[in-house]
Image 1 (cartoon, rainbow, N blue to C red):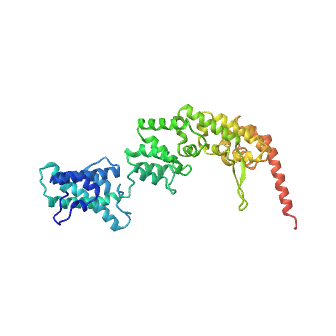
Image 2: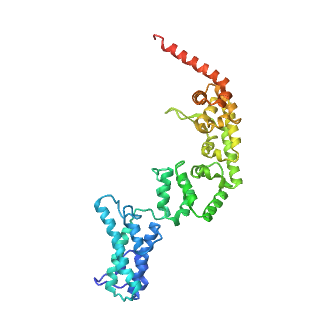
Image 3: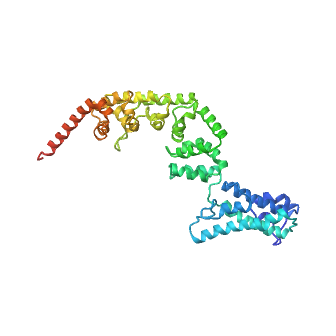
Length: 397
């Protein structure tokens, strides 16, 4: 039976369950000093776990709770009062280390029940602040944080977040991000994933890639694959095994070959001009194309689509793959130049404007030589169209 404190109430009913679990055995046996030191060690472990720090004792409490940017904030840390409370908790925990834990570690103590009760209750009181600290502590906390709809997906922010994630939890968080990837917004976390992959231990990275490769070998065109493309850093494409890469690249090519713009929508609203279902997968892979082993095949498909007499096919390329087809080097390549020439003869405005920019503003001789004839035809067409519009605007009705 739990012993009663000097106030006549069982201490078991006055402290939190985790505190009682730590002190129970020694407290019941009357080993009060051991109960105290075990509880202080437990408090150190909680602070270390929540903060991700590898320090101990007074240095741990200073780094976790004190300073201008404490690792563990016990409140919003904005007002003078909140900052005073933050400092007070830090100094009290540091004081417990100095006044209670350290003496019992260096000298023989034989604490009685009344002393133990006072110290245990005080530690339990301070632990409430630690439990409510605002720093994400568990992997689940971090998953909720990074999947928040307002998460800032920039390289700079990803580096800042990485520094806040405890080193021992980074691998587990990386794995959890991919397990829960259906929850993420498109291209929301690829910068953080890249930072995590760069930071974890080599053996952890290999384990992560081994499991990912096994999953990708059996992938199909579904939300899991699309969110993989959303999360995985394009520059890490080469870390996947050839079988997984080639399977996905082949799926992307098939999707791209069938892709075109279509009108979707009901009678109650204006229809949306968007990609068809068959080509949707390819739009998730745009950032990866230059890293593909089969990128030349993709460039040829894009060139063929630009040659299509169907404007919906060409418009798909302009809508989703402009950064590729109008790349300064690719625009001169055999993969795309024939398609871009045909696009000029179809009088596609975007093609005309960009190639005209390269030729007349940048005066690139190579591009001028390739597109001179088609550009002149397109230029004449657009000038005539402009004159017609001017003529119409001059009409008195």
